[in-house]
Length: 266
Image (tube, rainbow, N blue to C red; front, side, top):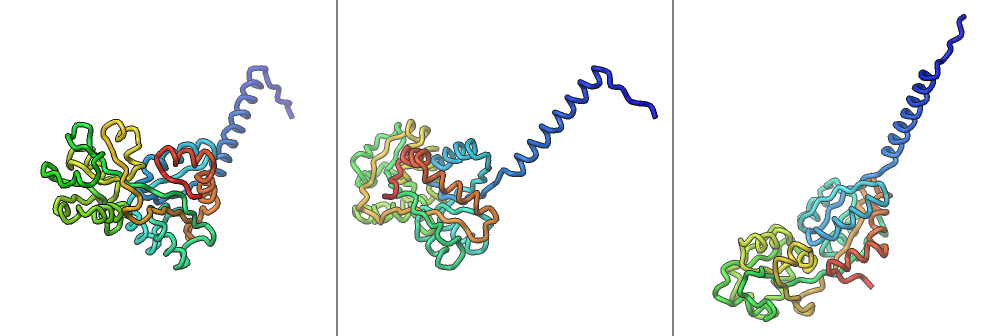
């Protein structure tokens, strides 16, 4: 039987091919080990959670699929088995109800922040938002944007604050309801509404911060916007969900939340 002899170029090519195959196999192993988590999050987290995701994915190699919307709508979907691993609500009452119904992983409920509401108007507006909610009585204001109070906690806080300041009765016919707090912010930013009550976390995002002025509504004019997260029992990615939640609790995660105006849990 003849003995095969490798010429030097053939031997080199064989080594290169072997190394390339090893790299492909290593990459496949890395991809196989990487996890993915699906997150349903209240839209007041729009900018903060996107920054969190960028840093988490960079450090962990895992992927996060994000859906933003109103806390109440997500709550209704999750009761019906919507396929999310992790739920961030602007009202901790919703995840608590899921916990009571046995739909969450025991011990994972986490109060991650307290939100704030602000009165926001574009810089081109003649309104002085620093005068507070009484400015909403200005006859020049035709449309006031807030989130729908039926399923958005920030909408409920807006109504409560206006009632506290005794302006709600005067302006309720001029209210334009966004499906969630992000949509309410878009209504004002686009010029579809004159002014609005939105989340501080959105007002502090670079685009809105440079485009308008805001005034923080006193916290004692509405119920606290205690926000909570929980891992869903149906999740098949509970370990990755735990990792993402732990990243939010880390010093880096907390710094990001603070940057967007959230008050952190004590």
